[in-house]
Image (cartoon, rainbow, N blue to C red):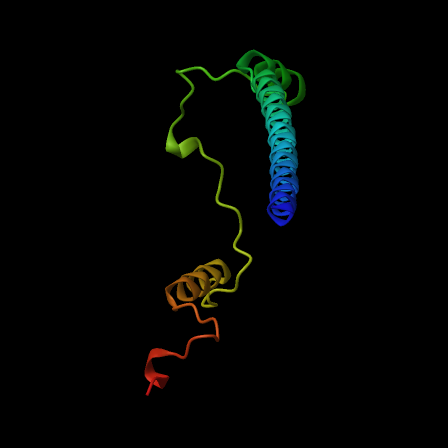
Length: 130
């Protein structure tokens, strides 16, 4: 009978330790969740503050005031138009006649690079497969 009592007491001590461990794990997880919620709340507050600042900086009246103060532009009227004959003369060409257009060559190079399939080196080209 004593052995049964010792076994029951041992099982109770083991069960109490196991329940205590589960309680401590759940407590630490609850604390972690609360910390994460607080961090999320702080980030949302920061986002709201940044959005409010952006709205203030992006206000049309503020931008108009800055443009008037710093750009020195004149207001545009709907009747501001002129004839083609009053346009200034074309600026002189700096490229020699018959020489290839340097800007056109750059555009062609960019287009050729965009049309070429990208190669990463990790996959063999389609013609190299066996």
